[in-house]
Amino acid sequence: MNDVVAGTLRVLIGDDHRIVREGLKQILADAPDVRVVAEAQTGPEVLAQVAQLQVSAGLDLVLLDIALPGIDGLDVLQQIKREHPKLPVLMLSTYPEKQYAVRCIKLGASGYLNKSADPDDMLAAVRKVAAGGVFLTASTAEALAAAVGQGGAQAGPEALSHREHQVYRLLTQGRTVSEIGAQLGLAPNTVSTYRARILEKTGTKNDVELALYAERHARTRPGG
Image (cartoon, rainbow, N blue to C red; front, side, top):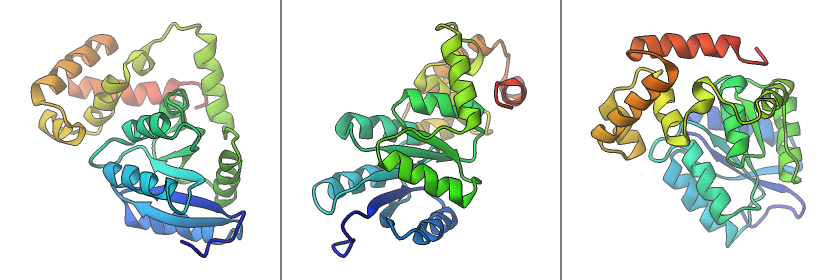
């Protein structure tokens, strides 16, 4: 890491899938001004790498997956912004922008990009975010404008708290209460309490209805 050329953007990739990390490294390798200096596959590893790099080789940007084992990507984002507020974080996900981009931006991310994005868009996002800017696709900008236009009146998943939204996302993926508790570090009874609140707020009666609700909501949100 000591051979990084001055002026090169130093990037940390946090993703639990090796094939994704390798693909991202290949895309960034084609840019002479970008260098991947570290990678991590769990939430705790990302935080440890950030802490180490900030006091040693330096770091200009974190590419962070939303779904990470150990500590959820959104929790990792919040902790990074608390401890290193000036460090830009670009969130990556397979989830549609209209579902998660606004939440990520509100939590402090400098941008949100789908993993299937064009390599040129990926490089443009990395450069803009590392330079202190905010990268918004047209879909994200539209969803953000819609959220602001609501004047605080929220409905659907947007009305859920941060923790409720984490549980909601995992429930709609078919995870059990025990699995969710293990991933988020919560007691099963606590997860069940969140689940009850989510069902109430979304007007659904069970996990099947919740999954159908999530699919329907994804199709009808702005930007889709």
